[in-house]
Amino acid sequence: MAEDQADNDDRGVREYRVTELARAAGITERTLRFYRERGLIPPPRREGRIAWYDDHHLARLRTISALLERGHTLSGIADLTSAFESGRDAGEALGLVEPTEETPVRLTPEALADHFAGQVTPENLAAALDLGYLAVSGEEIVHISRRLLDVSASLVREGVPLAAVLAAGREVREHAEALADLFTDLLHTHAAPEDTHRLRPLAKAVVDAELSLALDRRLSRER
Image (cartoon, rainbow, N blue to C red; front, side, top):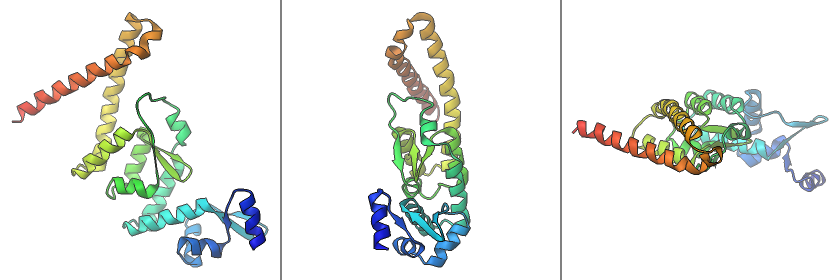
């Protein structure tokens, strides 16, 4: 076994037999096999009759344990796993746009759950994937914007359901796309093509100012 493990280390990949993986994850072999039968972890690499697992399997098992501790059921975890695996790859999602100001954030599934106080349900996860807020990269989740992540988490902490935050985000997306079209057409009509990116902050400033004024007007009516 030591020789097998040394070979794995030489390849830069750590692999485990069933007994070793179960011990590293703090579960029984029976539980490990149950998770495998339920499709909660991907199939192992097989070498003859020996099943080899790696650190990706260990990370998934630790994620399952963390989600169970937070009150998720195995059925719910299976739905989350399915949603992750059906989500767009991070490169595909983030490659659609090259953000000039937004910073993507890499998270583990349990860190994402911590941000949103247990409201990362399969439905909310699917909605976030559909919006392009989240993408999957191996065992990690990528949120497309640190600012959106922080604001969304703050709203949830203030008592706004995550489902409502995502629904509002979808509406905001539609209005933002319309505003982007408006200013892009304006700049294409009255400025040289090479000046579009340089003038982008001016378009943003107009939208920021108008939204601020609109909020002032709306809030003053509620006093």
